[in-house]
Amino acid sequence: MAPDANDLSLGVTEFVTLLNQTFDFAYPSLLITGELANLRISKNKWVYFDLKDESSSVKFFGTVYQLPGPLEDGMLLKVRGAPRLHNLYGFSVTVQSMQPAGEGTIKRAAELLQAKLQTEGLFDTSRKRALPYPPQTVGLITSGQSAAYADFVKIINARWSGLTISHIDVQVQGEAAPLQIVSAIEQCNALAEPPEVLVLIRGGGSAEDLAAFSTEQVTRAVAASRIPTLVAIGHEIDLSLAELAADQRASTPSNAAELLVPDRRTVLSQLAVARQQLSHQSNQLLQQAHQDLVVVTASLQALALQKVAQQRQHVQAAQQLLAAFNPVFILQRGYAIVRQNGHVIRSTAAYDRRQPTSLTMQDGTIEISN
Image (tube, rainbow, N blue to C red; front, side):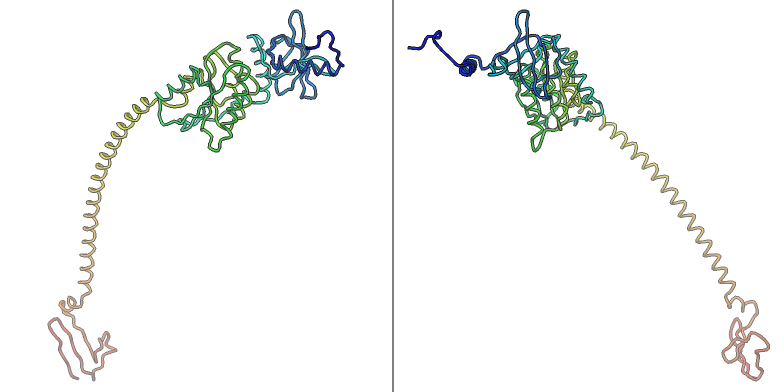
């Protein structure tokens, strides 16, 4: 027979242990919504705060790594945690995860985080990289059951072909979404052969539905990606911090597909026009080349004839010059060549009357013996 609870006697430590065991068994995790109060960060690591409503207040304890971004008192938060009774510091809830709740709080949290990250330069245009166009491999991070996924794949396949899309299925809203998205980004970046571009998309929804994409964890993961990023969250009027940190933002998931690849029909049409223009230009070039060839040929022929005429004149002049110096022609004019002992006598001083003399004339030679 079980002992009556009224007769149960416990020491303080036993009571704390028993109560925590009861919490672990009955309430291992609770989701509590309330207004943030008394937020305090200790040693840049530990976080202490209260959640309250009109009637009650509960203490919470966690780490800075669980913060979704900068917070301030008065914000509405959803905190998942485990109730604990500390043996020295009393009752509190140990934080497992936390996120802003309510449109006003989500907007304010995003504004605070945007200001913080803007100061760090995470949204600077100088950090933006050009996306490969079109890429051969794409890493797609989104819910595989979403309309955004179906629209993106449908438009990609309709516009282009030959892409390899590696899809990582993640939750795109709720408590688990930020950690799953961050893990997917890190997983793609860790691949030995990572995709050429990383695409992060989800369809429209309320501010709370889209809140995961304005958390500090997701925004920093997008900014830190070694792979160029394309992010499209919600509709055109929606703007998440992840989009600001991305290398390129698209207004919708469908627009992301349109920005990523060209339309094959447009490309084929452009190729046809280019082919026609190239053919026309080629014909014009050939015609011009033919005309130029005709002109050059005529010029070469004229130049060749001119050169031949000039050479003929040179030959004639040389012939006339040779004729002028030809001894035969000189002899025809009445001159004679005087030789003695085989040598030509050019002056009277060289003439020896005692030696035989030969006179070469136009029609023969006369030998004279002295």
